[in-house]
Length: 236
Ligand code: C5P
Image (cartoon, helix red, strand yellow):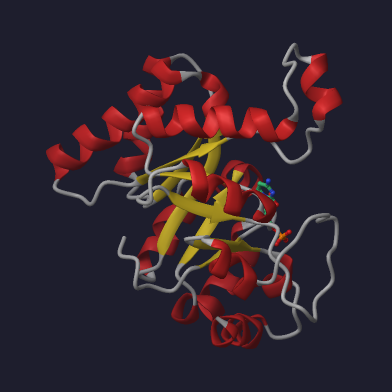
């Protein structure tokens, strides 16, 4: 996907195909991509991906794969058959798993002639603090662990990372410039934080170095989702 594009990825955090389709119809003309996560994918199945692709919009399949390298490689291949443009894997799955995922994406793209999807690494979940890390045997603080996993993802050749808004500046210092940063936790100045604790505005996140903005409730729960998306785009 080119850099001169609409950076808004709408998180379709809805429980049914029907509610996703209603949002899709309104928003497809004004946003860059739609994120399908576990809830919607389990409820609606792969058909939701096809329905999004039918509108011409890109799909970010956020299933956060984490398994043995062979299994993740096969899952990436299956995602490519669905024609997704971005997908997530857990960097804590290790170097070999990340390399297998990236290689699978590259080989499938060569074989099918499709554009290679962006394989994105998830580092430390934002629900984790340093105590939670210690409980699972990781003795670094969250910031150090994010940097360690981000560097490992770059070494594995991944094209991007998912990161919190407050990690963008630091990751831009340590990562090669071509690595794309996809950032949730985005809140326009006039909107509620909901359960997000560390947020930036869309403009601030892009200025800090985000490549893509994942935005859910500020668009989907707005009285007029399309107008909300257009206002965010205009603010950039
Ligand atoms: O509604 P909101 O804009 O907060 O939605 C953000 C989306 O990004 C949700 O799908 C959420 O699961 C996802 N996300 C996040 N924080 C992370 C990783 C993903 O908010 N660290």
